[in-house]
Image (tube, rainbow, N blue to C red):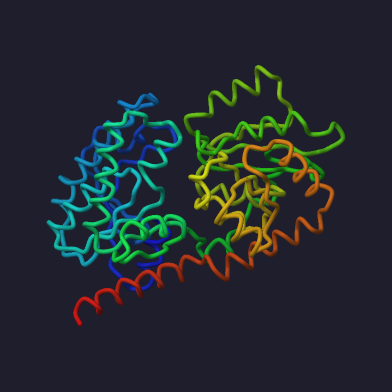
Length: 391
């Protein structure tokens, strides 16, 4: 969303952001914002308004719901303090409940309500076993469909999401709004000594997972693969991120004395490209579920831009785009540790082919996934819908 906001601003549009107090990844409100209900910030020339949110390190469903609903409520009150008239209000889901606030604020501001779906919810929560209460799931499904119907336009992060919603609402304007890369990534100056700083030599073959360490990612496959790497190999798996599964995975590594796995310390967002530039390939896994056949993990794009080949453990749309069409890496069956081992060893032993896949990824990202073009296409779709409405 920050990338989209930057591109819209650069294209001459006025952009205002309403979000919660910053708390990721530690699930603690950052010190400068603690005890505050409403704050106005600036982000690269964009006005950013932040409102109160309840955060807790607890993973219980009650804590999670309080987290969601606290901002759902506080954002409505915060919006009353944001001056100006607006043409479009875009609301991000999940959390699905935030759509209630988005719809209400759009009515108060007389703006067209665009509902951006980055993950189908509650379908994802149900199939992952995060939420099992049937009454709650039925209510959430009714809310989901009401939000789709009540929106001026629905945007979906993947083509799978778009097709799913289009099948339910064939007459609703729906637009594919994928993740992508900023052109600034190609001008980034990297820390050339980052590999050594991390404690590795040039002949080590580094495979990085960077992102949420959660249930959906199925990261046990990396630990299981690490146990099967031959002794003569120089492969090391790096995990960078935070999430509900991190402590359990660290315990597994310690208890099972798993070698070749290192959890990196959390770093600022600006340091991540230097880490990506220092590795040899990226591991992009998800659990083996039909739910994820339409998924495109956002972490793919930065790796493509920085010419890192993918070990892609995601079937369906992602496989079709980045393996079959883009030739950006090797597909591995989700949750198949043996397949991950074989693909990793192949990359390690074929460095020229590995670099060629990385080069393909950069070309593919530049051709199809530049945020500048993604933002432009979305605005053209909105404007076309407005013209249709007037005619």
